[in-house]
Image (cartoon, rainbow, N blue to C red; front, side):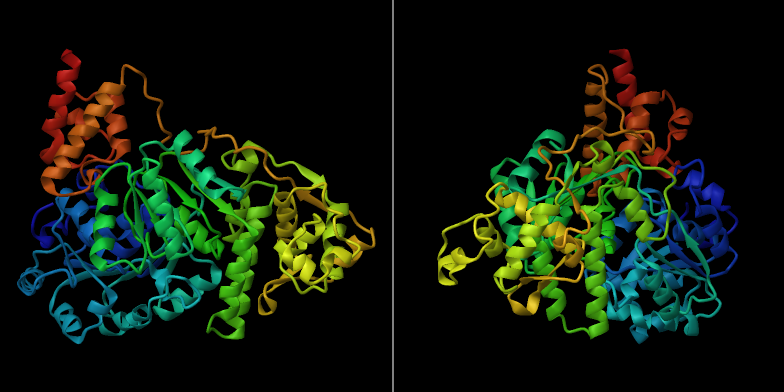
Amino acid sequence: MTDSATATTSLSPEYILEHTFGYSGFRGDQEDIIQTLVDGNDALVLMPTGGGKSLCYQIPALARPGCGVVISPLIALMQDQVEALRAAGVAAEFLNSSLAFEQAQDIESRLLRGELELLYLAPERLLQPRTLDLLARADISLFAIDEAHCVSQWGHDFRADYLQLSCLHQRFPQVPRVALTATADQRTRREIATRLDLENARHFVSSFDRPNIQYRITAKSNPKRQLLQFLQSEQQGNAGVVYCLSRSKVESTATWLQEQGFNALPYHAGLPATVRADHQRRFLREEGVIVVATIAFGMGIDKPDVRFVAHLDLPKSIEAYYQETGRAGRDGEPATALLLYGLEDVVKLSQMAAMSEGSEEHKRQERQRLDAMLGLCEITSCRRRALLRYFEEELAADCGNCDTCLEPPATWDASEAARKLMSCIYRTGQRFGAAHVIDVLRGADTEKVRQFEHQQVSTYGIGTDLSANEWRAITRQLVVQGYLRVNAEAFNALQLTELCRPVLREEEPLFLRTLPKQAPKAARPQSRARGAEQELTAEDQPLWDALRALRKRLAEERGVPPYVVFHDATLREMLSARPRNRDEMLAISGIGDSKLERFGDDFLKLLADFAES
């Protein structure tokens, strides 16, 4: 690329893909989406994280005359993308509150002179009359609305400023627009199209499948111990995200991980902005950093080598779960999504839904989404098939890369145990939470049992054959399957539903999944995973370490994250192909003309030195 946007007008998308971004071919719907925009038409794009959404607007912005304007909700995301584009030789800038007045003025002047190819803006900045007037005087190639699900009032990432972005259609009717998101069910999709005036746009819905992510969901027993075992046995030295529901849990978990020797940093909305920015910068630029966060962290984080996402609490919807787990394995290499959940999560999220300020319809929808999330946790069949079915996509066969495929869960006839639990709930008046009911079942001598004289009820002590953990698992599954409900307005009391009648009357059996006795197997079948991780031999290890060290040094010299130089997948291909000259280096995926000029000679010298030794 040159410094002038007008110089790119004669270049084809294929040329830009190969020479600017270093890729030999388009994936999935990318080519159709790009051509739609190059032709001047609008598009709505649903594509999973790591599917190549950015190229869908970056390439047409470079192929059309003028500057592409990208609306992005987060300053950090803008900075990451602009750094990566500059490394590829693209004249890209952002306008946001982090810039000094003189810097912003210079960027605006360059826009008006036609020297920019891509400009990133926050929605609130774009909507300022001064900015709209500026854009009206510039030559604009397209508008890209990234993270478009933020327009949905049903979603957990709702941003009010996104509702006003329909003004682009009125103010700039001749400029093509594209809205992009990784997560949207059918209703959210319709809402995006309506609110952004994209009903007549061409809709592209790619597969939601992320075959390189291994999904594992298991009940909490000792969450810290479970997390530690996972990290120590599988994720030593890897970057990852650990999600918690509360700020206090974020901080305590981060401190505990630090004590265990991990490079862990907390992130939540209650921390000072400078601390959040520093922790996010370290996560992006250093290797092996673990961020412990609330959902305030992650949207748009463009870090390709996140090897795991762990949830220590239940997400409130499948959309949230899919989006958060999708931050792992953006480079296509194997990654793991671990979720630990318990009955207390169900209770807490039910309370939050009941206490929300939304309408009754909104509360009902939130409850349905929570139920769907719980259903995903408790199923005994392939997790990926159930996850994709939620987004109205069918998988032809079981995935072979989730815990239920790798270690099919055992089930047992829980009819008698369920009757004991249901009877105990009934005998104690349907007024108490799970902990107390289980105490009664197991014959515990607690102050509360004595206070309500529950040692006198007929169900006292009839459940000593099962542990408290097993009773909690039974209770959780009965709640999920609708036999019991948690009444948030009555101190989270367990109550029976109509579904209990045939079970209590012994008219139908009830099978539940058993508690796992050990962690699921960590095997990672690679048949469906794109860009499967190569096992490094002892002979390859020194060169691999040297390639990563060189990448880190070059990144630090330029003040950018290592992946801006090259992704891990590019280094792996370099390790395998051992290029000897620039032509062979250019044939490696992820190396375009600009990166070859900037970094090629350093890596060729390193490879030559190793070849000689």
